[in-house]
Image (cartoon, rainbow, N blue to C red; front, side, top):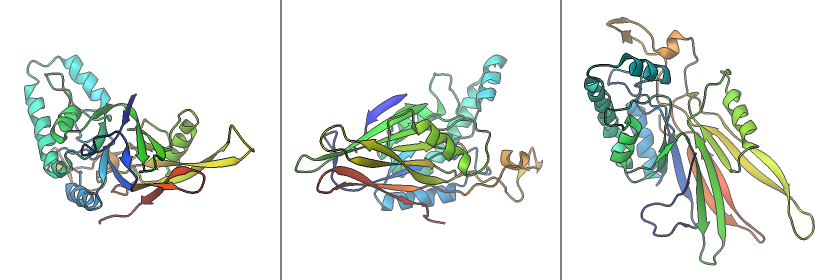
Length: 289
């Protein structure tokens, strides 16, 4: 697990200015060529929309659709004589995806590793290659990001985001990944919990109750959020071919539901009332279509 304080590269201190911060999580693109199911047209629209709002981005894994964990095991066991050709194909996928992602350079909180990635002969991976080109921090499997807002009166408001690509779940309903996140939240001190992987876009707040340590007893509610961060991979494509003949994607072959494509826009606004500082959350589920 990685832990980091995030501030934009243009800010010299580790504290964020006392103004709204907008974040767009992006993952599950699973690009594997121009004729594949990844919808780069829609991805570009979301990125442009996020940039118009001054957003920073958080990579949720599965950027290119290369090797799953089981396929990586098989490739290692095959002991190929010249794996360089595979490296070249994967790097081409990365470069084609970067044509859409490059406007976001220097605007990444970081990029998580997902399930689908390729390891090159030099030891790097498709994920670390994207990070290098985008000047983004590679976050590995899981991360907690601490955001500290400060005003001129030296008041601070801290917000913590836990993020993970996600893991295999037996449920296929919208509630399944949220239930998993809410259950996990009891074991982690964070304000927002993000996963990808299920290619869905459900989100919701839930409250925790606490009591102050000093002074008259006061019951406080701490609102937390659970979000599943969507996908840009189409599941059902008319005219899709496999090996030169009509055939479906992984989603179609396994009778999985079509995904609602896109991403959320999260705006965090530091706020202070007469007694405390806190961060207000606004979640925009819409966006360009």
